[in-house]
Image (tube, rainbow, N blue to C red; front, side, top):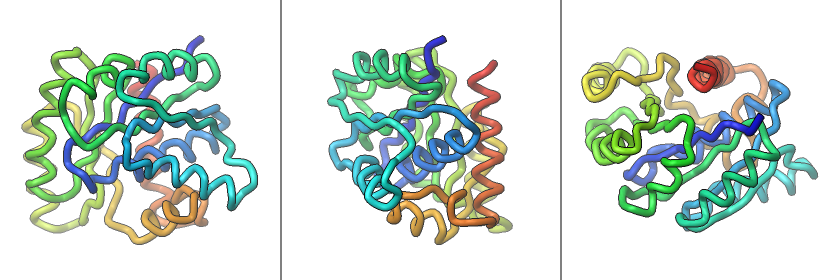
Length: 210
């Protein structure tokens, strides 16, 4: 069977798209899945992570490709034949260039940091995904447990869409540290981040199986 495609989208830069993509990828690999990453963001953060990973480990353990927005369909079709899971990192914008990635996606994930500005930035993404009739879930990223702001944003997110992931990624230094090292947080040893990524991966795989 062809692999499943996850598109990670958010029109606001710095929302944690690449962090979400690499941590899901590494967690899936550790569960025995074959994974491919597709970077369509001209900034190339995902590609730099991949190169750093290969230099550090010798073998990245997953496939990697880049594409323009309009080459997404071709690349996804190819990668789905090679991997169980294809994760697409998209540019921080919402326009016609995003449509090809959305069309290929079995699941759309939208990272939202704990600020109302990030939440407001999701509205265009959600509208575009709805037009493509795609299953879309918000993922609370850099969440600050126990803060009024974090809970306010989470409640507001639930009002925007029915799809808000129960699992959250907290505001932890380990995510930034491991990203710069070409690793996922789960490869840094046992930590609270390992449990967070594991719970989110469980949830995402359940959504893909539905």
